[in-house]
Amino acid sequence: KQEVTQIPAALSVPEGENLVLNCSFTDSAIYNLQWFRQDPGKGLTSLLLIQSSQREQTSGRLNASLDKSSGRSTLYIAASQPGDSATYLCAVRPLSRGSQGNLIFGKGTKLSVKP
Amino acid sequence: DGGITQSPKYLFRKEGQNVTLSCEQNLNHDAMYWYRQDPGQGLRLIYYSQIVNDFQKGDIAEGYSVSREKKESFPLTVTSAQKNPTAFYLCASSVTGGAGNEAFFGQGTRLTVV
Image 1 (cartoon, chains in turn brown, red):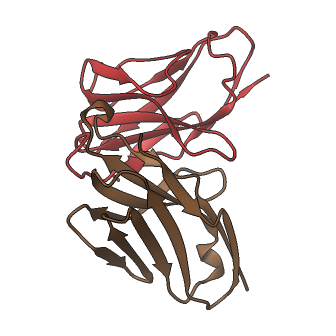
Image 2 (cartoon, helix red, strand yellow):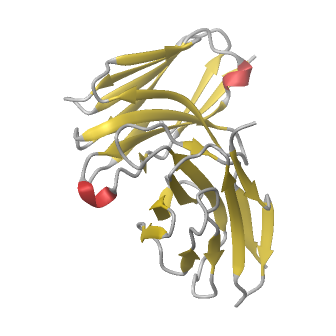
Image 3 (cartoon, chains in turn purple, blue):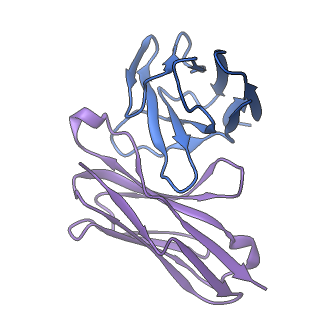
């Protein structure tokens, strides 16, 4: 059964620092991996989608990488800002027929960027 | 503006009462999903639908029911059989259920039992 783990559970950094959030998954048979941002009491905002055939995706100050063979993804945030404070969720879409390709989520990393 | 609309934002349920959460999308997506989020836990799948008039149980379907009569709408009913319904409920959609499609989420409904 696919499991997704995110480490650390919480992270506090000073403004301007570059940082990396980690996501690992147990089964490499996936369609894609998606990173989301969630602000308190809000829904999920899609940040980046990496297809299984891709190695990385970039959007502004965000860069996500995917190493399917080792079951790992990282989300790199450059020059962090207080507005980046949120919970970041990683999710994989398994290839297995039984799951119908539904997303499997990690528990998230709660990021706090201090001014 | 294309997107997913969930309503209401907050909902209060009395013991033994059924309540229905609304989810509407204008993205022309075929697949729609309902997830439940509890503090300290990842999102868990309740029900999903790949096409109109068809839906499947997810990991925690007991005490919930859904319908998919229109492509745009996927309402979730929390029945009195759900023993611990207090949670944050999120609706999502994607073009199809597999093949690497990006999922988009609504803003959620917070349900509280009073």
